[in-house]
Length: 389
Ligand SMILES: [Fe+2]
Image (cartoon, rainbow, N blue to C red; front, top):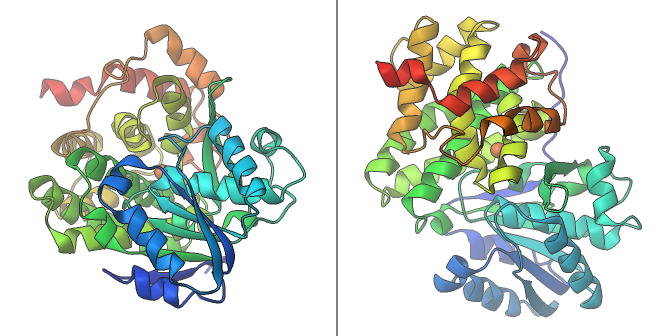
């Protein structure tokens, strides 16, 4: 067996309705000025932000609880810069990321930006691990998707240069993650499916990645099975509390895989797509995924067949059957858009291909010349093979 290393530095609390008990158990960490970073509106409307603030105010070690909610989906560099200024002015001691991946990623970037001598834009563009510490981060996800609560990345968008990318490093690992599926139970259908597809993408990509280990593969297999059962159940009935909890679990264990096995081409290709269209991470992944998996079949057919057999519970063999199976699964979740339908014009495809950044070497298909442009072109048309049949 090959040597491998697994890093899980974050303390994790998992369970339905455990968030208040988990916060009480974090008394030693929760001291001084606490800055909540959140994406706002729906969490306010549901009363979650007030409940969290009230629970924190009952902790006698906390001096002040302040809220920074100027964070949008696909968090912008400028929003993070405002958050860093706010946190410095208010002398934040600890940052809580409360929301979907956008809120947690923004919280991580703010926590590192407050401590860093370098401006956050420099950390974003330098493409290497920041040489700085961060304020302690507590991550409380309200979606089951990004796994950001357990990963060491903060994904941001430089809206001026239309670049989406990540700041990655050990300083960005949250100290504590509180994964409570109660927060996901009010999510509408579209967000449930898009974030849920992100979980499945993490599972499949980290399974196929050359950096996968027996441990991460075992977790991928579990998450693929869960997504294969629970996403269709949630598409039928959003009130399925067990399916919600299962998806939160799958999201959490895929957060571990993100830091220990990496993702593949869909995640690299989604960033330019998201930056050009401002569409969600999960919607972009779903639009790219069938074309990518079809390319991947040429390199790792056994893995692709195993993944789709785990996903559907039926034996799937052959390139065409694999292509149709993943396309139909994505379509059943209401997510099978082409890049064309997402507003991309054909002459944007080479531009997006030139903007793909980050490590692609872990993807077996990356050895094929022109594979990035090829996936974009196939995804632009949509899977015509599947649509015709
Ligand atoms: Fe993702």
